[in-house]
Image 1 (cartoon, one colour):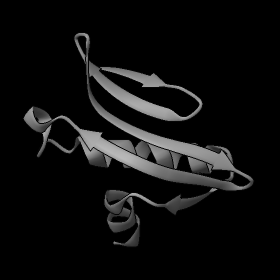
Image 2 (cartoon, helix red, strand yellow; image 1 turned 60 degrees about the horizontal axis):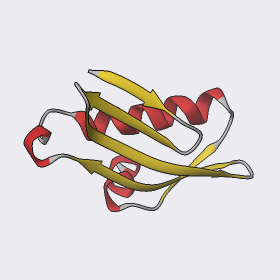
Image 3 (tube, rainbow, N blue to C red; image 1 turned 180 degrees about the vertical axis):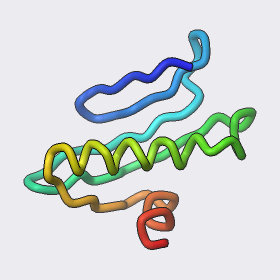
Image 4 (spheres, rainbow, N blue to C red; image 1 turned 90 degrees about the vertical axis):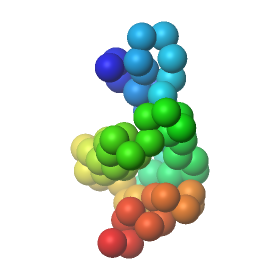
Amino acid sequence: MKELLTSNSYSLVDIDKVIAVVSFEISGDELIILHTFVDESYRGQGLAKKLMEKCDEIAKKNKLRIKPVCSYAVKYFSA
């Protein structure tokens, strides 16, 4: 599995297919998590959790607060 990080997303790729992605934006001192997607055939393998862990890592590295907007991120960061 390959990882791709851009300025507004983090993706997991299996061969040539994006199997999981989180999109976010950085505004001021916040990392705003907008959308999380995991391909149906890869669900239940902890990939969404891995996406959230990467967001947390990015936020800590850049001293940002996380503002979850998508439902999965809200649930993950409020637990």
